[in-house]
Structures are given as C-alpha cells and as structure tokens.
Image 1 (tube, rainbow, N blue to C red):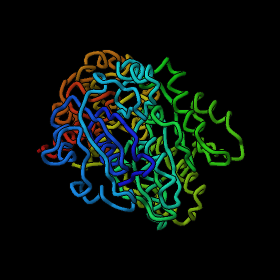
Image 2: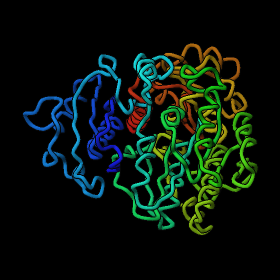
Image 3: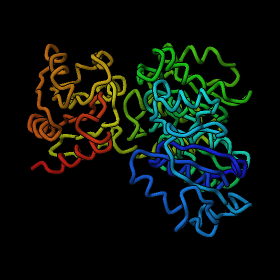
Length: 458
C-alpha cells in the first residue's frame, strides 16, 4: 500500500467507498490521518467498519495492533500508521478545518452539493491520484507516466506497462485501470508507475508531475460535466500544465483540440503522433488505425524512458490486448466474434469498423449523442447492423438508408441473428457506440454477456 507520513494528524473527508475510495481510506489511516468516510451504500460502510476497532465508538482512534498488516508497515509510516476512522455524510457536517475532501471521480463537481459546500469552506477537493502525487516524495526513486485521451487510454496504458515488463523495468498500472494505485505496494528504485487518467481524475489532482505525459486524442465526451467541449479539452490540457520543465510530452495531433495543446508546448519536450500508413502485421493484437496511434504513443513513451528498440518491438509483438477492447473471443465456421464493448461512443467505435472488411455490427445501448456521424466513413464495411437497447430504434432509423438493419433489442438476440447471417470471413462485432447502463451494470458485464451468447451458439 502507498501512503505518506505527511498525512499524519491531518483530517480528510472521503465520499464514495467503492474500490478507489476504500483504498484511499486505508492509505490515509496508514499515514496517520483522521478520516471521516461516507457512502450511501451501507454495505460499503460496513466493509470498512472493522478498521475502527472492535467495540470502539465510530470516532475512536484505531490502535495500530488492530490494523491489517499492510496498514502497519513501518515502510509506509514510520510512526506506525495510527489513524482514526468515523462515518458521516460530508453534506451533513461542518467541513471547516478539514485538509481535503476526497471524492470518487464519478462525483460531478459541477453540480454536486458537497462540492459547492467544500468550495465555500475553502477545502480542496481532490482524488486518490492527488494523494499518490503527495506520497511520491517518500517513495523510492521512480518515474510516472500519465496517459489521457477520450479513446485508447486503457490499451495504451496496458501496452506501455507490458513493454516495461518485457524490458525488465519494475512497473505498475493504476488510475483508471486495474487496482487503485494507493492499494498497490510501492515499486523499488527505478520503477515506473503507469497511470491511465480520465479527465475526472485530472480534475481532482493539482500536483501530479508526470515524467512523460501522453494525450491520445480529444473528441466530444462527458460534456454534462464541463462548460462545453472547450472545458473538456482544458481538463486534458492540465496534465501538461502540471509537468516540471523538461519533462516529456507525447501528443496525438489528428484532432484540432489535441493539436492546439501540442502547439502550446515547448518543441524540445514534445513528440507528435500522427499515424499514417504503417505495417502493423507484426502486432496481432494491435490492428486498426486506432491501435496504430496507441502503438506509436507507447513507442514514443518508452523511448523517452530509455527502453531499447528490441524490447519495444518484442512488447508490441507479444501484447495480447485487453478484455472488451477489440478482443477476438472466438472463431466459428470461419466467422470471427470480436468484443469491443469498451467502445462507448461513436468515436471509439469508428476505428473498430475500419479494422475489418465485412462486419455484422451490434450497436446500441444508452446513447451519449444523437448521431453516429463519426462512424459514417466506415459504413461501407458493414454488411448488416443489429440495434439493441434504449438507442436501438433511433439508431435503426439512422442506419436504415445506408445498410440492412435488424432492430433486435437484446444482445443475445443480436448475436444469434448475426451468427445466422454471417458467412466465412465475416466478423461479428460488438462495438456499441453507447454506454451500457440501460441494460447492463457496466461495459464489462455487457462484454461478458456477449461472450456468453457466443459460447451458447449451436
């Protein structure tokens, strides 16, 4: 676990106790902080209740002996990790005197009442990435890579981590992927922390100085959280504003917003990524134009970290991809079934449509916009579309003039119909261009349902 003795004696409120929030509470206790935590889900509060100590009041100081071993580590807190934990809703208490309000990235800072309350009290609103940034001074010497962008963040983060592992460099993934960064054990000297950073996470940090900062692209997304597209782009730009002079920047310049950020940076620290025609045949899990950009960003980042060309090429060739991101899950009777459930907007679906010649496209869910214009240049690759979910009727109407469409409603029905219509050499592609929340808990559950439906085919 990563923690900092600098938190000793400080007082923090933590709102949201899912994975990152729970890890934040444990790290703050390890650092000796006084923590007031809250989640509207009583089960999440109950899961942390043992950290208060058996038989103690909710505000009692927790004896070190009652902490889990990972929280008692002298490496993390030489004073023994003595903190205190209580439960109270930050909206219902006086925040005066707190050193920070720590919120989940899912809390909308532009409209949540607790954000306005914290600002009125002069309390900084931060996230677990900012706590990691504060803890860095006490960690063994290391570097940090931060990757942001509307699309491609997870693949690029995992690819950089994989190349570092191939090169024998100690590394961890964190941020918006994998385990919360504060829950992981500190790297030894010379290690590299590779962080996937959403705009929400960037909003909640003010001191994360990345040795290499990466911006893949910026397309309209999450606009309900920002003052228009310009506000969203400005959030991404903050990743570079926090860098110390001389630290490296890698930016894709295929879109105007990203190109504008690139122009604002010193040329000597900047690598521009602009994929053209390139041979991706040696990288079986990195097909399509979007993965060309991801691969080039990873190459530039690893070069900035001093990784050899041989290790970079070996990493690109052996990378197996991520679940739910252009994941080939089966080939049946010459038909490939590809799970791209992570494609939750049209801009992220467009490259998937470009990657295959003849596609049976499963599309729909909870739409983030009213059109599929970003996908239109690749409609010629679609043999037939199968619309599902809340957006199904509207998307069927949009597509019907350009391709055969079946308005099937459910994912299972779409897989069955697509499998029946497909012929050898075709690809059945789940790339929904929509969020999943109308029919599924998240995109992972949607992708798992796709896999199950494929496996159930006779």
